[in-house]
Length: 613
Image 1 (cartoon, helix red, strand yellow):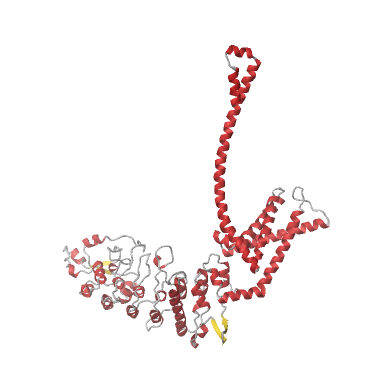
Image 2 (cartoon, one colour; image 1 turned 30 degrees about the vertical axis):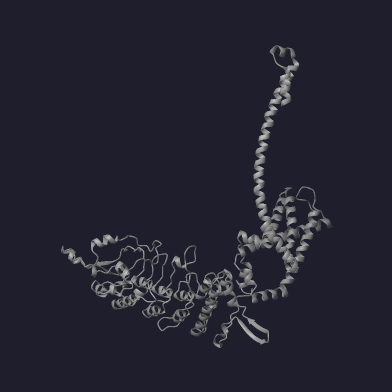
């Protein structure tokens, strides 16, 4: 480490002339923000302007003495443009004299003057490999090692907000060069460096999320040899339990990059599952006590739960049915073959984090995740389908039948109370007899039931957090209708206690909806359940669209009819005024006919005019 860095700052040499400094246009910005520039391009690459930094001028004494600094020959000056051009062209000869120049001017390749948004010449060289080679890489590493800044040079990071944190090791892994990865690691490259820029995060727009870490990048790009080397080398071993900014380990990252719907989905799933199992086996060999699959991310999801949450069906099925044949990895299996006899197989499954006896289990995620893609397909996997069937046969079916009978009793009581309602103004007085006691008991029962429906509806909404589409589809009966049913009854009860006769309208609608909701319990039976779902889909698809179009036409014709009625009304008003005037004139003529003759008024003309109107 330089002595200047021990005191919290670094000191660099600067041999540029005043004209060169003005040409570079030193910026006064000190923040790490930078515009969205390409990671690398051969077409007029934008070079970051040098930022303010502590530098000493090599020609300061000549300036004090009034001497003009000696102009450097162009072939002896190595600036960032020249170095970038040399490494991009893979021409080693263009780097001749670089070490002498840097040593003479007390410069290093890790200096900020040789970086553009954090990108060094080493990164530039690795971005321009041909057939996996670029001889300038070895030259740069050799020069940096001789100058004593090799570790800083190798671990330099992008400072651009878009590619922040990316190092030369990331680039070498992405370029699939095992040779340069081994070379960089041997020179002190950090195998836990995180590429956390916006480009490496999931978002709309161009991005590549791989888990930020070099190990995750090697795994997500299908490089098993690279994964093995990073996890087990003599310099610095990559820790598989290291997590990115979202808490995702390398196993989470593999689940995230899995593909479901694609022509290459089988090929993608194959390499994802192979590397997934490889990492588990290597981790077990290096750290036998580490349970890598039990590590949760910031959302409390293990790799299995994450696969269920985002609907990665193939990876989800593989994790559930994974079985290792090697004795040293047998305990890592989730499926165990107990015995086989001919075509009969007996399997044991690990239900950890799957069954609902655990909080935030896989079953709970799939049950309440109404917006999860491929949710029904995942529930059809062998383990979950058998598990759900066992639950239904053992206790869920009986609970469903009991709920149906209780709801049927509620409907009968609700109908009886509504049919025998009193016709007086609410609230009614209570008389001391058996009939009144039964009536009040019925009202109390349906009140408690509807409060229960209302509260359960709110709880389910908070648990599922459904969108409008999923609310209509998945929560059609148990959330939407039962919640509305309870809400209507509570409004009716409030109006009743307030003494408003309008409570009856809400009560009628609530009663009708209560009878419709009995269709929900038909889902517990094989034949009626299909019919109920078919009716629901008809209501939510065809009938709903028809009602929307019908309402549009209804408003349109209503507006037109209102305009026509207003026009006819105006004409009738005008006609009525004219008839009143004619009637008054007729009365005057009949009262004084002689005066009309004297005025020269034709009675026939008046009569025809009246008939016309």
